[in-house]
Amino acid sequence: MGGDISSIVEYEHEGLAAHTGFGHREIEKLKEVFGSMALEDSSLDSDEFKDKTRIGLQEMERLFKFFDVIQNGRIDFYEFLVGVSALNQADLKTKAELLFPIYSEKGDLNGNIPASGVKMLMKTI
Image (cartoon, rainbow, N blue to C red; front, side, top):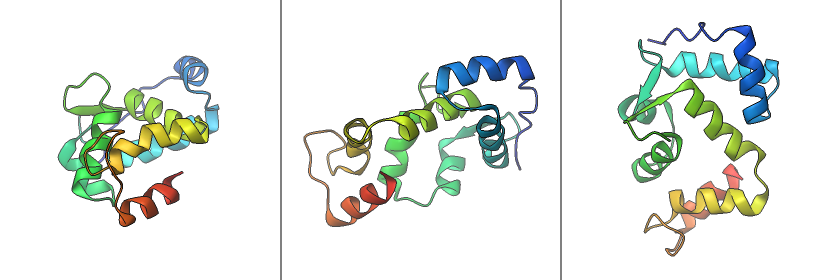
């Protein structure tokens, strides 16, 4: 499978690096990871995302919504990169605020996290 995202040219790396804080090497590695998961149109739909992640269905759906910034039912490389950057570079409080709704029973900041969700959350953070 795997989409061709090789069209991201060198000068775009500067903009991506400035926006995400990732260096050239990290962007290339994430491009490889995303390319190995992406469909022929260089995006991920929720079914493909579900097949490539190893989390529960509810958590996957919430994480997909987090990454799908423009809410078109697909994640492109830019959305993927920005999402990974947000999760990677955030402080502990921000990570918890971003990830809590993914593992929460209610899907928001007001719910409870079951024991299995706490374990997954701690691994993620």
